[in-house]
Image (cartoon, rainbow, N blue to C red; front, side, top):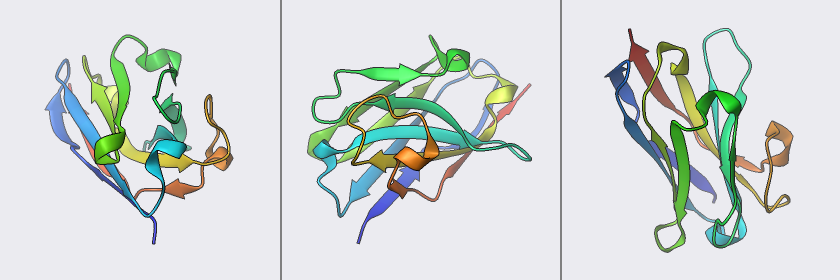
Amino acid sequence: QVQLVESGGGLVQAGGSLRLSCVASGIPFSLYAMGWFRQAPGKEREFVAGISNRNGDRTYSVDSVKGRFTISRDNAKNTVYLQMNSLKPEDTAVYYCAASSTVPSGATRRWQYDYWGQGTQVTVSS
């Protein structure tokens, strides 16, 4: 049974930081590219950041988070992280991690991901 479990969300003031974690089980983690998406109330789920499979030597993100968010992975712990700095109120959303077996690098579309976590809430107050 495949499980992706996110943690690390919470309430933070604008300018603050949070580190999200996603632990995977039931899949050969190192063979999967990983991604983070977010969904704000009333909006579509959108891609935030992704990391290539195996050694994670390629990362990619949307322009709105470049320079503020960093994605990384630890294959020994079956975990992908999203370090979020300089948070803004517009970053408020439920954040989801996802795993892709078919696109080893560069997956930014929802349909490119096979498995999803349940999400963790991030709220940034002004």
